[in-house]
Length: 353
Image: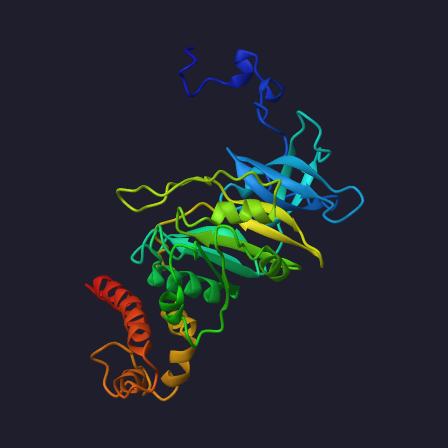
C-alpha cells in the first residue's frame, strides 16, 4: 500500500515510538526566565561622565582605594537614563586598569533630578544631572547681555527639583549689574559678582564645600573659565563671544563631575554645556509661581483657581503691582511670571483642541 493510505498500519512499515525524534531547544533546555541576578557583590560608584556609551565611574569614593573605572550599561538598563551624578551599582572588572570594562547593573535611588525640555511645548524631558543639591547659575553683566528670563527659568527648574539656586554675575568690569540684579529682589538667592581680575573664588568655593553643585549658563558667559579657576585640573575649553551675533560659542560639549578641594572641605562641581534656551515643558505650572517667592506670598490672597494672568479677576498680585506695593521692579517681576504662565496656558489650549 501507499504511505498515503490511512488504513495502513505503522507496524507494517517498521516504525514504533522509539523512532520519534524531539528537536532540542537550540538556545537552552531550560525555559527563559525574567529573573535577574541579585548582584549582591556590586560596588557603588559615582558616575563622573559619559563618552560614546562608556561611563567613567568613581569607585570607593572617599575610601582608601578610590579610583576610576570604565563601565557600560547592562542590557536590562537600556531604557534607563544614566546621567552624571548618578550612584550606580557596578559589577565585573572594576579595577580601572587599561583595557578593562565593568558593567552597570542598577541605579541607586536619586535625591534630586534636574531636567529640561527642548522648549516649553515639548513634554519630553532631558535629564541634565542627578543628585545635585545646588545649582550655580552663571550669567555675564555684558558680552553677552544678561537675560533675566533665562535665569528665571533656571530658578524654576532648580526649585522644581528641590535644588538650592545660587547666582554668579561675571564680567562686572564691563558693566554694572545692579539693574539686572534688581530683577531678583525678593528672591532667596545668594549672589556673587566677579570681574576678570577679581574673581571671588574663596567665597564661591566656600559655598561649594560639602555640596554637589551643577553649573549652568548661557554660552560665552565665562562658566568654563570659572570652573577652571576653581578646579585647575579641569582644563575645560573656553571660548569667546561672536562680535556680530553677540552669542557665545559652545565649548563644553559634555556634562562632567569634578572634585572641588576647598580649604574647609571638598565638594563636587558638575559642569554642563552652555545652552541658549531652557524649556520647562515638563514642569508643573505651580512650580513657576514658587520660583517667584515674593509674588507667591502675595498670591496667597488670590481667589481659588487664580491664573495670575493679566485678565485674571481679583488677582492679588496684579492689584499689588498696580498699587505699587511690590516696589519699582514689581511690574517686571509680574511680567516675567505671566509670560511663563501664558506659555503653559497656550499649551493647555492646544492640547484640548
